[in-house]
Image 1 (cartoon, rainbow, N blue to C red):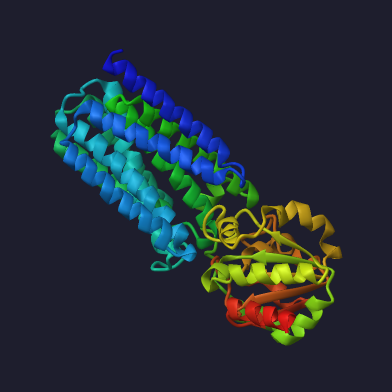
Image 2: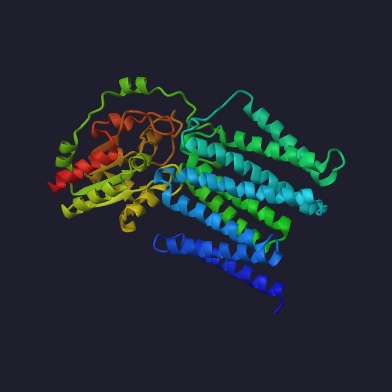
Length: 461
């Protein structure tokens, strides 16, 4: 059996592992095994490719594998759950820059003069560059190094149009008129334009749309890898990139539907750009009604149904374990406890699901908004823990709100709402929430973990 056949068989095995692993990620019960299978498929593909092509000395391959494994281990085990969205953004960026480097190396080598291959290189460098700088900006917004509010300026669409025209001209030169400027100049110009486009692509997008942006950049990293696969004629890279690109686009579409907005609206509307008028809103809507944890316990103790709505604030406070313990105590007290998860809660897709899974909360008690909204009036207590925009009644009541029309978890229809927050500050989108001033809402101010721990102590006492 010749080497080429063995390599192709290994690639087919890797592709099967990718597809089966991706399928298993769709179920909470099999997600870990799916992740392991997909990772094993990638390891097999990398080893076969490096060994077959004799790219570099074996000791460098081994060194790179060890270094990558160490970085991956610390990234997976040491990064806090609150920093998981930032880590995903950085990993997307790494995928983009890796594809850019592959395309650049092939272009500089000068061995590929066919317009079809040059077109693949153009797309690899362009998408990889946009993914890299776009992911860096997303990282900055998610880590709040950069403000989560969108950056908008006059003539923005005109500037973007000029940039796209410039990229198109460089692309035409790369494919057909390589004598106008040197290949190195063409490549540097394309990389620079791609980097600028990535920055201008993400800067205008507000914080509340970050879950959509993360999913879209993930798709871009896959598409860049797919294009790189065509450049170097590597079948498994084409398959893996296509899978990541397609799944990322599907997830992007799911996120957009969860917000009842089109992708174009997410990318170009500047969501959250409206000036914050929280002080005026507070005066117009009335006074908030604070409550102590001890008084909240008395209400919870008498409740027969409790709905917990987690948000990014729960991640910041690292309160998921205390929340799980409180949920178990409520169930022992005779209450039915559910956890309502909005698709865009947190700062990346599935953020709250991962947090609750870490705390060993059973998937059986997780529900989606459409499951609980019709019966919300029968819920005795809704506990909103660090969530803001996904429970904002303005989405259904205020046509002038930037989030009007977005499906929310309608906790305001329940009998009593407890909102756990540190202060009256608006959420990541910078939008005031009239839920805080509703007659059935009580504010539990303070650190979420400390507050929930106090409630746990009350039940145990």
